[in-house]
Length: 177
Image (cartoon, rainbow, N blue to C red; front, side, top):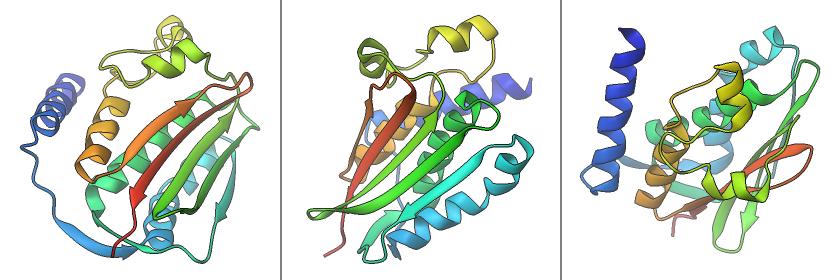
């Protein structure tokens, strides 16, 4: 019942976001604070899983005007996926830096990487990598699709990069004027 309720909630959120009917409560926030707050909630999970967190957050990041809860949801989705696919003793790396007039955030993890075909499919609703289907561990395949829509609503973008021994997800948000 809990799983079905969450699935229905995720589908409702995705549908509203795709239709542009999701209201955002935007506030100015320092980019580094936004990323660090999201990471704080994951530290206990990383310790329990014996996974190292490597934070590389630039000190000169501009502010962004975002719905903080929705951006925490995006970072939470990316960190949950990284945690799920990182082997014990592995590393999750989070980088945040300027990229022109944008803030760029990268979340990558050691372990099995993505093929170029998988990287092209990961934002498709309900799509899951073969190893996630084989071990029947993981979510519904909606988290990345939701993250993509939330970032689009903020004027940002997200993509996956294919690497053989590392999965990397990158998103950019426009800096506040």
